[in-house]
Amino acid sequence: MKSQIISIELYGDIWGRFQKALEAEGCGYWGELYQHIFDDEFVPDQEALTRRMNVPIEIRNQGAAAVAKYYNLNEDDLNKIHENFYKSIY
Image: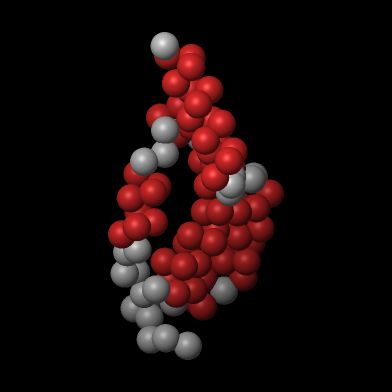
């Protein structure tokens, strides 16, 4: 185990329940993200951060579960979303 300033182990059973609650709400992506943050000792992944910052506003406005679903889409699905969005504004 890496030496972590803050360890998931400090959370005990709460961590597992937190992960299950996120999954139940369609937000498993966020649980995985938090796990990676701990695993990477809170060193940000700039590429992933940039990707999260560039989620279309219409997706962000739908909430955390919609954003998680957006992240789990494949490239073809993402292209369709963007294409439909641009058709709707022009």
